[in-house]
Length: 159
View 1 (cartoon, helix red, strand yellow):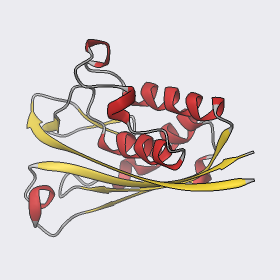
View 2 (cartoon, rainbow, N blue to C red):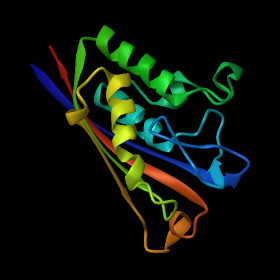
View 3 (cartoon, rainbow, N blue to C red):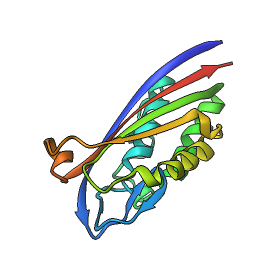
């Protein structure tokens, strides 16, 4: 068995007039993330972590932001495609650990639902997905509310 680890990072600007989607969950907030797809930074970081672990590039290669078919795309559906490609290469997901960086809104009440959405999309147990959220104490672009970022680490195994 071969074990591999990957890291993913994503960032998007917060703007009015967009829905805030994190981990496939719509969060009530007066701003949302700006991007070509639904701009779900958490799911994007998870996808990049998985792709990185398998040395399969990144989401920009698979789902380019200049391709109209991905305009307003549901990132959870894109994650399902990433998982399918990993499985075709003989990989199974061991676990995922992710952190969202956002000053507001408070995300703790939504984390269990995010974990459930990510686990289902990856075909793994919810116990194998950990999501955390942290503020940056009013520092930097996330601290002043200009945007959100997410980091993710994934372990995969080739059987």
